[in-house]
Amino acid sequence: MDQKITIDDVAKEAGVSKGLVSLALNDRPGVSAEAKGRILRVADQLGWRPDPRARGLSTRRAYALGLIVRRSPHVIEVDPFFAAFIAGAEAVLAERGQVLVLSVVPDVDSELDAYRRLSSERRVDGFFVTDLLDDDHRVRALTGLGKPAVVLGRPDDAAGMPVISRDYSAGISKLVGHLAELGHRRIAHVTGNTAMQHARIRLERFLAECRAWGLESVVEQADFSPEQGAAATRRLLDDPNRPTAVIYGNDPMAIAGMAVAHERGLSLPGDLSIAGMDGSDMGEWVYPTLTSLGNAPSQWGRAAAETLLRLIEEGTAPDVELPGADLIRRASTAAPAGTAHHNTKER
Image 1: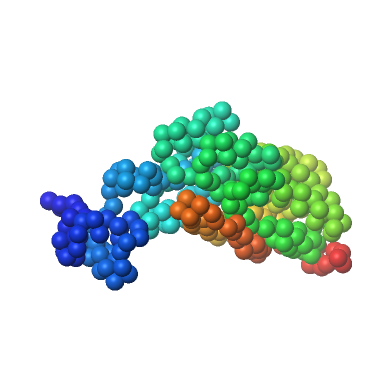
Image 2: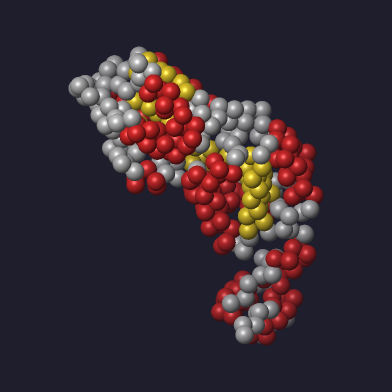
């Protein structure tokens, strides 16, 4: 039977005191670089792993970070962003012997209760704030709780919290321009929940680019779920003057839209061009492959975890600007049937 390796075992093997081992393993001052290096090598060779409960008692830390998501559990289930974000965050936390505490809640009251409960019970050391809203109540709540947090998106007032952001403006500009140059004149956008800042900003940029190219724009509201993406697509295709291209707020809605188009007997992309905005891996495995914007959600997770840990450990951390979302051209966009590929307008 495997026996748990203790700091006593590490101290005995390294030929030092238990106290010195404790200082080295907890990265505290009072240990020479040479002794610390030897202790860490011995701990690794013996397979020593920290006991989170014991470490928490000595440091008053939970060694856990919190992610509270106010969405339908079904949306979390089908949206690859969250799985990839969590994978990126977990990759960082696993290296540090820490964990992620995830809570999916249905409404604002439950969300605020979850923040208060996890904070008061000291179950987490800090929080990730996702799906940013305008004038977001969570920023104020977390400031009141005194808990470290990082924000995904750029709030009007971050209240000193580090911000992780990615610019979609150039990518959306390229995507609309790509469709315009193919000859599309009437383009639709199926939005996510526009109460969320990133959905609203994407919609505003889409409309601005359509105006710049002299295009006719159509907007259908949805909530990022495949079901609402499919329903919005049916409404668009029922219109006698249907658009020749549709841009969706995320890839799951775009893939649902492709299914509806196939069901209606349309040829993609000749009869209808479709694009997403997530750049998810699943876009490479549908037919035709999905044009989208590069987003790399695991990169969001890694950057957020590294920043939040630095904030917790050092008391401060800088904002992080991720590389801009660029256009990924795949097979789901082409010139409309009977239309030559051309520039529709000089900008």
